[in-house]
Image (cartoon, rainbow, N blue to C red; front, top):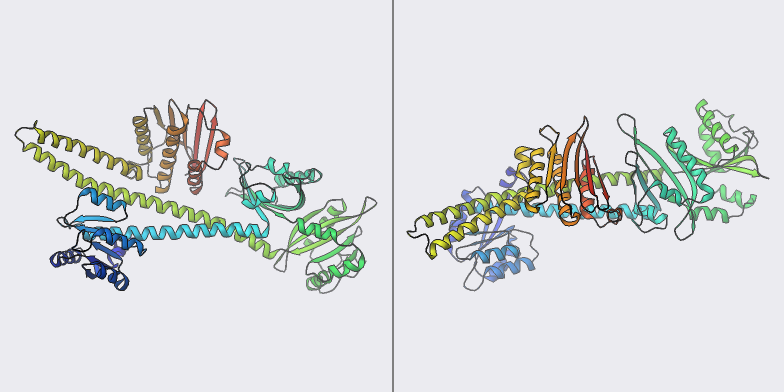
Length: 611
């Protein structure tokens, strides 16, 4: 929310105050501060409740102690009413300890009546903070709903999805892919070899041959095969895969789906294959069914096939007529001839065809008699809607990625805002307090007396509080990133780590300092910060080395320690949320994060970002 939008906000301010003069003063200060507001004054519990229910405020100002009511009771009513609006304590006599306790209990800010100059800004800041929090919660709810919808869609369709990074050879499976294989979600580390190990031994050669052909020709593939689940049961699967290319037409990812079609396969096998029942079956389906002998003559067909042929070439193809002799295009004749000949060689396979705006899945099955292939049975199914559902799933995945990126950006903006407020507001006030203490100390004739020593103690305490504020502000959003850039921020973090932990941290940069995008800077910094935190907590390292470098297209950040080394089991158990967060940050920038640990020799983390 920009500054102009905040200024134009119409505030409805409910003020709990028993002093008419204080009320007039506060209204004057709010008006002078440029706020556009309505005002409702109350001075006891009944009128306070009335103001909440009838006036419907979006900001509450509250004095601490009234004759028959106080701020504690008002805050309790605020919470009981589930009001998601700012609650600001404005009082003249309250201890700092009480104010801090009230902040912990949920008030947004507090001001003394002797220092009301920042009241307009406090109202604006509290309102903006509440609004951002509301938007954040709404975004999180939307994200959860989208994830739930995606999982439900795959579960209902019995379709699992997977993706293989061709550079890193890392595989990702959806939850339904694990379930199709009879596994618990995340039970094993996904890989091509693991998937192949589940394929039925009789189908394994066929599947591997298709995969090899797809790899060599960079061609999308689809076929049926069987798997043996972890519990020993056999399931029938439809698999489809396709390549994803970069701008240089180089394949970078290989992704696809697996669909459990066992029920369909078993149902087909259970049907009697006699002419009467087959005729009733094939002529009452919208799917196309036909068969062809080795001379390319039509053996049989259903009504759906006959109607489709009529629309394509204007006439039917009768039984025992050459199926390629109709008024087809040369491309159609060549393509289907190759399909039939492939089936005549004894191979069962599936191809995808587009005709009349419809997407069809055409399967070819060799017809054998005494082990000799005498023809092929063909089956065409309209999969237009299924393909649309698959595209919807892919789109949802992209939307989830964008939403995650947006939430990450909101979090960093909130951190930056909080850091500025802590540093600017509390820092300035504590500095002023320190100066006042120092002034009083210099007015003492005997600085060694009890008062002088107490003042010196207060000065030391002020320094500690100021340093604490600086540390908290820096952890939330290091100002050095905005002031000096990425390289300086990373070097500062290494020095800060070494100073706080006593572990030597060596930083080397071969990167020329320049202006990077804010997302690159803050996410690179957070990844280094999380890695160093893991070193502190788990590595038991004696030293850490951090190197920053680049080539023409990539930025590299490498962090190596000589500790006990993270194990593969720990990285793959799904509980290392810090590592998952770092990988998510890298992925949102189009980059990659690699972590490798060697027992008793340390852990190496490598971040690669496109630039």
